[in-house]
Image (cartoon, rainbow, N blue to C red):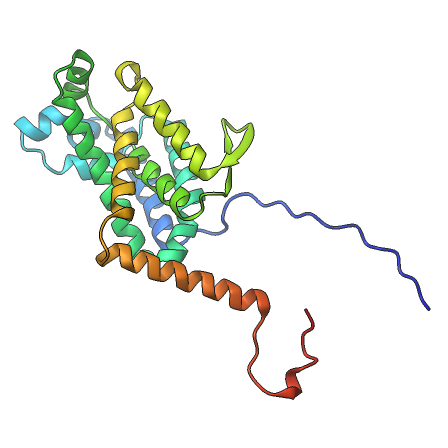
Amino acid sequence: MSRFAARPATIHYSFGPGPWSPAIKWIIIANVVMFLAQIVYPPVVRYLGLSPQDVLQQQQIWQPVTYMFLHGGPFHILFNMLGIWMFGVELERMWGTRQFLKYFAVTGIGAGLTVIGVGLLPFDWAALTYVGTTIGASGALYGLLMAYAFYFPDRPLLMFLLFPIPAKYFVAIIGAMAFLSAPNSQVSEAAHLGGLVIGYVYLRGGRGGLTAEIKYRYLKWKMNRLRRKFDVHSGGRSDWDRHVH
């Protein structure tokens, strides 16, 4: 009888979900192009950034869409694009590119409309939102975080890049932080909250349309993963010894 020394288990670490998916690639490219345009021609922020005052008084109705493609600096765009890549790629693979883009647009625009709504509230801090300018893809990113927690609630995410907690608690904590800090924050927490709330309502609401399509694609994705895991083969006894599990 031969004896073989047991091989130590090999642990593989990876960062991120893998290569860009089609929609993620074009979202990142569009944001980088617009960021370069800001550097070359800074006044573009005045016309394409989201100002509730301009939308309501000057009828600049494109701003709830265009604000998502502008950023306040290198770190702002870096972290937003990193987050969109990390959480968006797996969602796009699961839903398909068209449905992913619909969800991204709905949560991003919904976050912008939330900013406008908050700017109309009868508070002093809300008045600053009304006359201020909001830029960045954070609202849509928070929508992606909501979807990620919705479908992968127990996946660990690093809180403050220090310790892992389940995705569902991660999103609950950042949502609470955004809500509590909204009156005194220099960041547009209204957009963050809007992305979370619109994403949740969109994923939970209704039995048809996009929600049904997302559920169908999720179940299809799960079935494909199970097929690959167990390596199911058709045929008779000739395949018996082909794979042993």
